[in-house]
Length: 169
Image (spheres, rainbow, N blue to C red):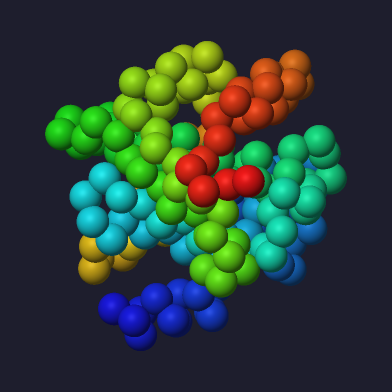
């Protein structure tokens, strides 16, 4: 497992809100680098990014930071998992920056809230292939992308000001 995670962390970025370093990121892109996404146990997720400071790094030249987009991705995956696995009631996400050297905090996202966000924002017409490590099995899952665009950006930022993780100052 450690060997697989080390390979994943050093060899590539997860294609979730996907971008490849050689590919320029444009204003229409939802792409941000993610080191890996894992479910080490049922209903517990790890979300690890390479950014040392995702709060002060623009997601793609706009008003959203990478932090804002990372939280959206957690909601997208939570919504997907809640739809796929009826036994899920929530996912507690442990969010780390700097390839797990900096803990950002823990987010508890109940399925009811993930569903509410999905209904409020809707989804873009595309899904993104997202590599997720489930316990010990690596899978690529197509995750619909929340439509946080236009006037919805202000609503998302207002929501995130109230939706704070545990352990965050």
